Image 1 (cartoon, rainbow, N blue to C red):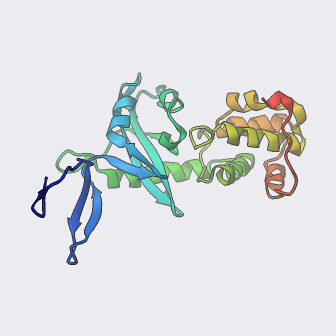
Image 2: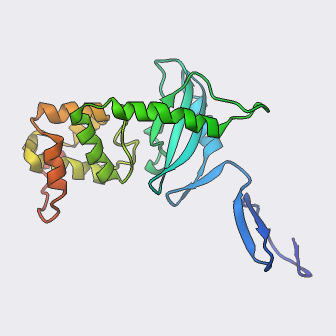
Image 3: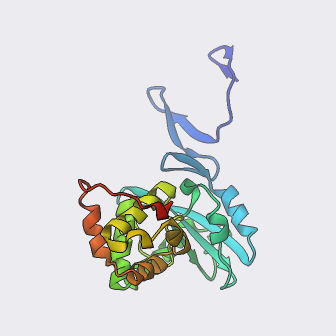
Length: 233
């Protein structure tokens, strides 16, 4: 492209920018559906297209909201009540996984027939808050534990540890915490993988006689080393 009398190579990045009064280039957004989330660039339209190909899912939309300075990816989808995008989402890298997935009857549209993302975000707030208020005391304790461990807000019974950003290292840390709090070698990584939803994890702790408060106390005392049992590997 021509620049100050010379031909320079330029790259079509999709970024939108403008020159200010001082001649400096100012970034003002993207010209496509890409967003930057937790240091990664995520192509929302491409991921939405993959979700629409899942059995039973008619349409979907991905949104980004910010809570307490932390950006969260939300997924809203329409389709059969027994359908779910979870099978695909669990195959994605942790940084691509939505914080929460909510089934809605229809996606709101603007007067021009385009997706009304602002209206959809407002519509999602109610079910997300309702899910949080519907947790029993043990589930609320588990949600607090997961939130502290994962560094994001967890507040729905059907949220999955691995879809909320959990990885193998964090899973081992959580298992070690359970073992040190009294579960011993009776609880391993396979148990967490088989009970990765918040409500399932709450029942798992209850079956081992563990209270979430005990785990929160252990997590607050980092000076006590956590030793992982061989059964967790």
